[in-house]
Length: 194
Image 1 (spheres, helix red, strand yellow):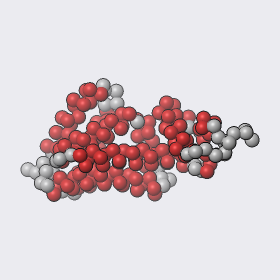
Image 2: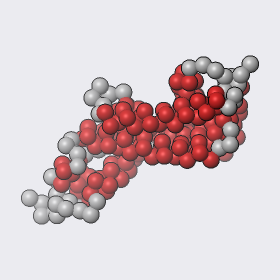
Image 3: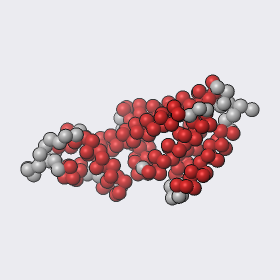
Image 4: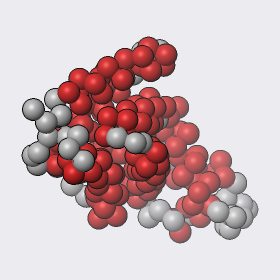
């Protein structure tokens, strides 16, 4: 016994915050429930009340990332007046999140595609996609987006934003701010009815 207390105010949140810092600084291989417990000042067994193992911790990190990203995308979508403005607002949110949380985003997509990905994570991914899909469907109803399968169009939008973020991971923020509207214009031009 280490003599450390077992209980903590909000241990789950403390462990997730510590894990996200470690992930960003040293990558997923450096994550250890025992080390996170030490940093939180609790016994090495305390994290097991929240995460049965490291995979459960990784899943919780990925879920938290998808939930935060979806919340920000929803807020951006609700502030826009038209589809193009909404796509730009959502694009800015997605790219900022991707560039500010690169290791977390990598983990989010890795766990999303893992064969043992939990249903809760799959549902969170679905909610994120629904945000983009909702923007496309609304644009179609308003005549601002061409008719067609909204899921395919939403996938194209999501792929474009993700690709833009990945390809610009070392680009200065001011250059990204200048070029993202042009990317959205190119994307939107392909979406308008002809």
